[in-house]
Length: 412
Figure 1 (cartoon, rainbow, N blue to C red):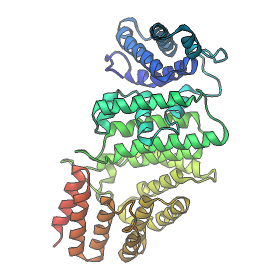
Figure 2: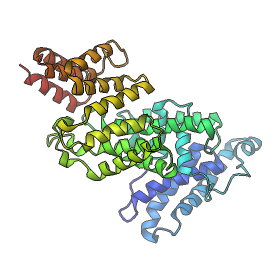
Figure 3: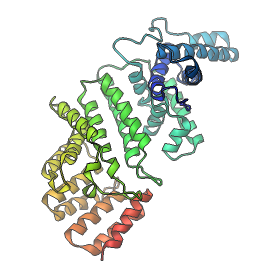
Figure 4: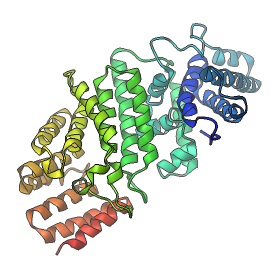
C-alpha cells in the first residue's frame, strides 16, 4: 500500500484493504483487475480523506470507488475482445450478494486468505500473494522482505494470480474436510511468514519486525473470525509467546543473545500473558494439535523465572508428542536439546547422531550449533570449537555467524 498522509489512519486502510478487495473479487471475480481497482481506491482515499475527512462508512466508500474503477478497467478489456467473449467472461454472478454486503456467515478477509493459500500454489507463491493482497504490502516491500529483486517478485505474484484465476475456485469459504485442509494451508503460510520475520534465513539482520507484526496481525484476524478453532488460537499464542522475547534477543551491537542469557525483564509481559491465556484455553478443549503443543512449550520457557528453573522434563514430553504427530527434523533437533537439558548432554548427543544422517537437516547450521553446545557442556572443548566453526560456515545471517565464531574463539 502506498504511503499514507499522517492525517489518515494507516492502520484503518491496512485493515480495510483486504475487506474491500475480497468484496470486489466476490462480486466480480478476476483477482488481478480487482486488486488494481482497490489499489486505486486506496490511493484516492489517501488523497481525499485528509481534505474531506474519513467517511462515515469507509469500507463502503472504498468498495464503491473500486467498483467504479473496475468498471472502467472492464470497458477497456471489452474494447480488446469480441463482445460475446466479454459477456461470457465478465458478467457478475446474479446470485452473488452485493459487494458491500458480505454474507452473514463469512468474512471477505478470511475468504481472501483461503484464496491466496490455494493448494495449486507453491508455499512461496502463497506467502507472496498473502502479503500482497491481504497484508497490504507493496510488491517492492514483499521483495525486500524475501531478499529478491522486485521484478522476480512481480512475476511470482502475477503467476500466482493467474493460477488462482485458472483454477476457477469460487469466492466463498470451503466446507467440511476441504475447509480443514485449506485452513491448514492458511495457518502454515502465516507460520512461515512469522518464522521468516523472527529468524531470517539470510541477510544482515537476525529478524524482520515488519514480518512478525504482519503475521500476528493476520492471525488475530483469523482468530477473531474462527474463535472456536483451538489450532488458530494455538498459532496466535505461539507467535505472541515467541515474539515476546524479541526485545532481548540481541544486544546493543546487534549480536545474538541466546535465551539462557537473555534479560527476561525485557520480554514483553503483555504478549506472554495473552499467549498463556490463549494456549491454556485452547488446550482445555482436549484437541491438542501441533501449534497448541508448540505454544505450550513456548509458555513453559516464558513462565520460567530463570533459565535454570525451566521445566525441561515437561518440554521433553511435549516434544515427544509433537514427534508422534509428524516426522519433522527440526522438532527432533529441539527434542534432542530438551533431552540433553533434562537427562544430560550425552543423552542429547546420542539423539543428534541419528539426525546427522538426515539429509533434510544435516547441512543446517542449527544441527552443528546444537552439537557444539552439547559438546561444550560435556567438556569436549576441542570438538565443540570445531562444531561451532562448522556451524558458523553454514549460518546464513551475519549475527548468527558472528555469535558462532565468537563461541568458537572462546574455546581453548
